[in-house]
Structure formats: structure tokens, C-alpha cells
Image 1 (spheres, one colour):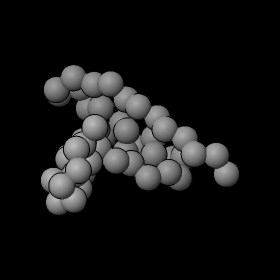
Image 2: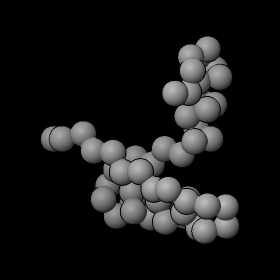
Image 3: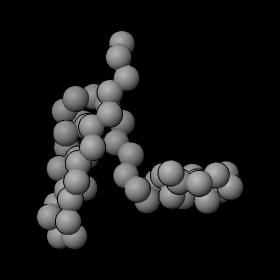
Image 4: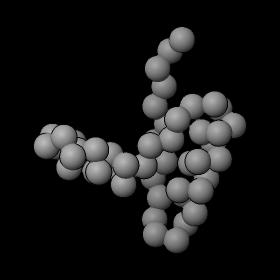
Length: 49
């Protein structure tokens, strides 16, 4: 199985988060948004970049 990354650029109020979650669900892949990445980086002491 190949690793895949889908990036959705969005603006505030565009519904991009909802669309991203729907796409991930349809494709059967996990959805990670910036909030989750930032929280994990903060907890681990690593940079979110």
C-alpha cells in the first residue's frame, strides 16, 4: 500500500475542514488537521513543522 498525502488549502469559513473529513472518510484514510498536529507537537516538545 502506498502512503498518500492530500493537502487541502482553505480559508476561514470555506468549509474546508468538513470537506477534508468527508474526503478522508470516502477514501478510507485518516484525516489530520493543524489542530491535531500542533497539539501533538506541543506535547512531544517537537516543532510542528
